[in-house]
Length: 340
Image (tube, rainbow, N blue to C red; front, side):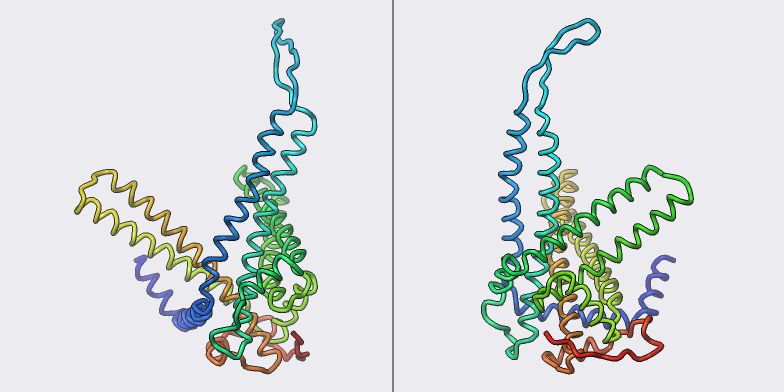
């Protein structure tokens, strides 16, 4: 029954799935021209952990600041350690700094991916310009560093608020008011998260500041009647599904080989579990990069369409089949060409 339902879903959405597969193929081709990203992005993550080292060390030493004070309880006298007043505030500041830094690093990685892919897209040579990754890194940690930090701050706040909403849901807060507030907050946070995703792509392409990039991104997609939801939702779900299926198959094969060939016994389950986790991490990283490449190519195509140009014919042949945004099917929107 379940298999039949799955097959029916695939048959009904066959055209959408075919289009999504072609979009993923175009993005994979773009990524294959910029394989250096697979070395730069992990290096940025390692740099983040190196940045965390002194913060953690200072947190440890901050905990040592205080004095021993006497205390009386139930007629007994004993000594306790009392931290200085500034230590809790420093802990809060350090933790917030680490969260903000992590969010900013994620946005910096998206910026580097978008800038590199955009340079490939708008170049006449299919191989792309030289030093594309280097230029994107220089812009990310130079002129556009404020944009990245602001985006990281915004996303960090969104994540914290979403965690608070989820925590309230787990505590089973009753009442129609709480339900309405949760729905409103979730919708608002999802809208911010969605808009921010394409804003960073556009900022990396044009070098605009965050607020102007957000406004111009919305106007760009609105003028060209493009459905960003299709690219965002369908491609992400297909990539996530492929990741889960491949990792599960890999774990099963590893378990069978270990039990039948090496005779590890019950230890084979633990090894298979570790293999599954490792492959999930590797494929998750690849999907994260590919997902951002898809978004970047999508925005580049929108810029091309807005300016009436064709830089990558193979991209246009695929993205021209994207569905028109439902909110703009009723009428024609006057187009003002974008100058990048």
